[in-house]
Amino acid sequence: MPEPKSERRTVIDPAVAELLTGLERQRSDAALPRKEREKKARERAKIQARREARATYDLPPALREKIRLLAEEQRVPASQIVTLALARFLDDLGCGKVDLGSYKCPSRSPRYDWNLEFPPELIETPRPTKKGQGR
Image 1 (cartoon, helix red, strand yellow):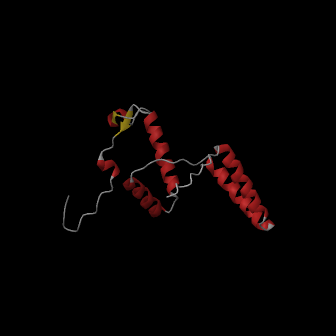
Image 2 (image 1 turned 60 degrees about the vertical axis):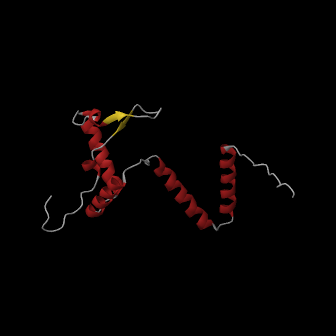
Image 3 (image 1 turned 90 degrees about the horizontal axis):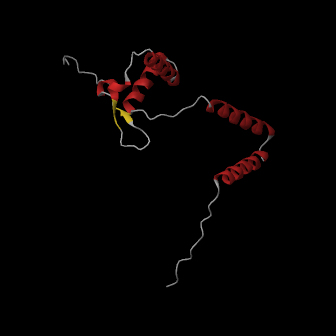
């Protein structure tokens, strides 16, 4: 039985890969009509301008749902609800109204000394009770 042909994997430097991707994008854009190229350029500029204002954080699903529902109810963007909440939190933290120490527990991560543990009632969405049932 013949041995399987071993192929050499090509490893490309990330900078070279980015350059090749950019060249490929330029080539494909050049084939588009002028209006389409201009539209794509405006879209790219808009995305690039928003990058500075973007951040990604891990949030518990129940908290994300609370934010989504509040934003929907108030008819405002969820990101603006979160911006207000974070700004108020940081202000309260600076004034000593919030004590992070009460939430700290040791971390096993070599990167962090502490993790924050939140009480479930702070994060979870309370489930609606059926009529006639009290809590």
